[in-house]
Length: 108
Length: 118
Image (cartoon, rainbow over all chains, first blue to last red; front, side):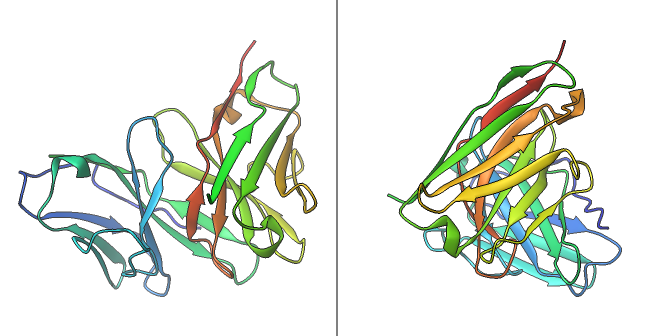
């Protein structure tokens, strides 16, 4: 199983760069997804497969993955980026294992 | 429009049952992996169950033996039959679509709230 650890909160000034980390003991071979969730809304995929941006997601959002840590980077942060962010991994080689992190509240 | 709309949530007593439904539009549920993902108040999402394109089904350990996922290709809907409900099943339940062969949830419904309480 996977236990994904995220910082509970990150604060950043508008226009600056926010970095949100996601760590676990055993994710070096897994792809990591990132979701943004605003209050009262469903999660929205913002990064898949470590660093792919789905259609419609601004280039300001990027991802990286090295060893057992993945990082979501948001450049030129805007007030509208304020939200909870969750990392997620999966393993479907046998019975599927899908894990989400505990979430990071980004305050702008 | 490509969207998912859940229904069927509500208040149920411990030990009771509830059936959730998810109506898809703009794509065929039979052609994608379709999952239920839930989120307890103040917590991160938790994957619950998946039905693959070929019809095979998988479940999280926390719901195995109690929940059953199904789909109706003619109606383009996804269902979740929940039995023996417990207080820790209380959550917003989302219907979610993922990629052809992965668990990247690229489309979510708005969710339906299930509250298990006496």
